[in-house]
Image 1 (spheres, rainbow, N blue to C red):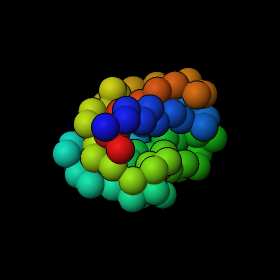
Image 2: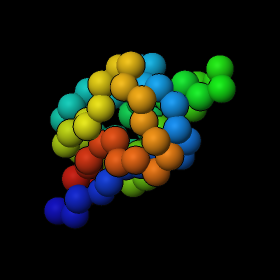
Image 3: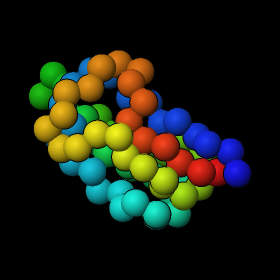
Image 4: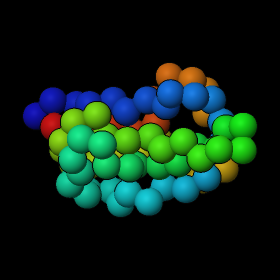
Length: 73
């Protein structure tokens, strides 16, 4: 299976991680939310697959294009 790296689009603070490890996700499913400029921006699956790991936790500060999760697709 191919490893899919999920990246943030914006810098900000992780405010929630609704996806569970091991969950089967489809393209566009929400993995986590990043708060930036008082807005919540979702970080979503870019392909279908299984959520293998989340590399951040709530309240972590992330940078633009940072890898925050790994999926197997």
